[in-house]
Image (tube, rainbow, N blue to C red; front, side, top):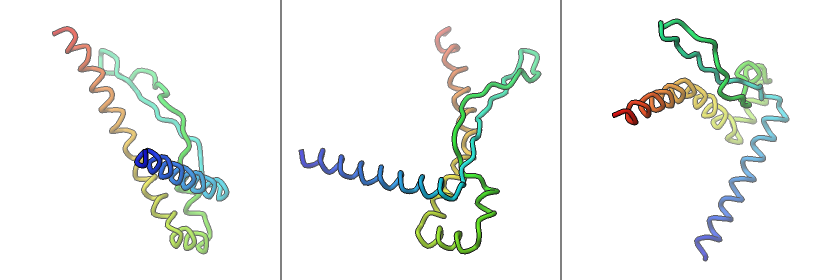
Length: 114
């Protein structure tokens, strides 16, 4: 029971921390809507129409760069700037994630036919 209570308390603390971080980014107007798209290939190898896989909010690098120097210093000093850069780096993984998902999806029918 104590472990369950500790887990719940930790979860709530992290939820509040996340909520505070999102509010900070929203107050600074750093979010923009982005889309994750996939362009499949036709049987002849040509590009098929792109398909939208997801729509999500992400930090805009342009908006981040446009912040006044004192805001960047404040973000650095409160630890938020490192988290923002970690978020931006994680966005680079979308293409790899889509490729892995497609590879697995293509392997599933082959395994079913074996």
